[in-house]
Image (cartoon, rainbow, N blue to C red; front, top):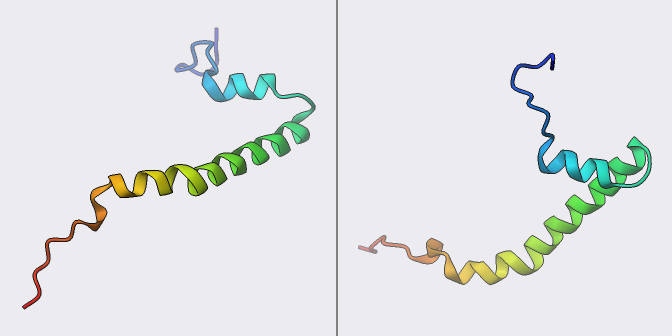
Length: 65
C-alpha cells in the first residue's frame, strides 16, 4: 500500500521517460534539459511561425475616430 493516497502505481509519461533515459540522476537531468530545450527550439522555429497566420490575434476591431 502506498503512503500517498492518490498514488495508484502509475508514474505517467514523465516517469516513463525518466526510467528509460540512460545514466545516473545527473546524466538524466542533463539529457532532460537538452530534450526540453530542443522541444522549445522546434516550437519557436517551426510550429509557432506555421500556426501564427491561422490564429485570430491580428483581427483587431478598434475603429479610428
